[in-house]
Length: 139
Image 1 (spheres, rainbow, N blue to C red):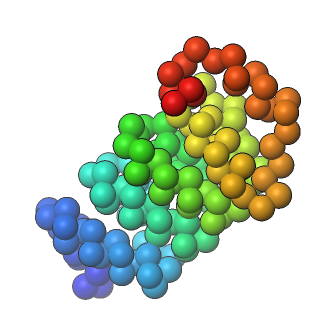
Image 2: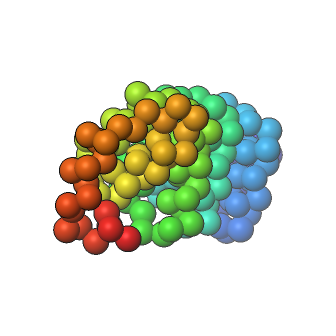
């Protein structure tokens, strides 16, 4: 209960410490709070929330991670989301990101699938993206 209270603190540094505790203990009871911070927290809190979601290992959060990827311009948060997807290792759910209209979501899904054991990327999925004029795809 103490950690849950600190997770709701107005001070982002206090929330960050609470997030680290949740991440280290892989506490599934915080999934909804983690998803909320993934979408509404500051960039440091988003990164740690993504890290915690990957460590907890509940694959049901993959759509939330992909959505968060589309909403972030912070490369560090993006990296944390990618790493969480790799840790979760659900090829089918991550491949859903390749169908997104959002270039950031597609990029995160591609990188995660490339890094996953047995990621299953094939040339037919990658080749159409090589001709993209979207700077996010190219960067």
